Amino acid sequence: MHELGIMKDVLATALRVAEENKGKKVTKITLRVGAMSGIVPRFCSSMFEVIAKDTIAEGCEMIVEEEPAVFKCLDCGEQSIYENPGHEIKCLSCGSHSLRLITGYKSQIVNIGII
Image (cartoon, rainbow, N blue to C red; front, side):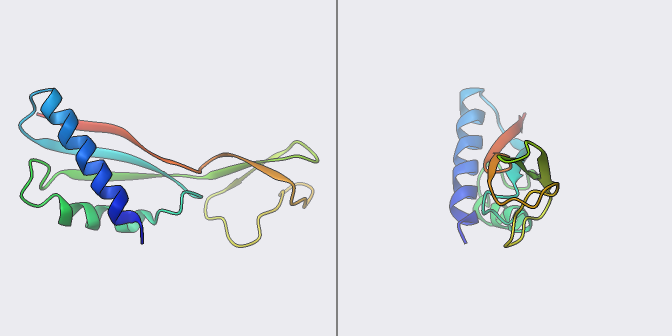
């Protein structure tokens, strides 16, 4: 479960941004999580709530947007979108397993709200 480490990094970034901008409170964080990132979105908010306790980010609204995985087939060129990729990922057009992952492999902070 590496969500804890990632949420610690998100908190550190939010606190740094607040400090750099003379913010008194972190009010909202929007995080985009790719389907192939290995991060379980439903754990992010609860983990963040625990680690943000007694900081200026305590009580902050955590929004986690899920980004689907998009693969391009190296055989037919079609793109396939997977919301929840399973164990077997193949081209939805031709069935090939020769795919290149285009999006949905990373996580990023989209927005940090401070006052």
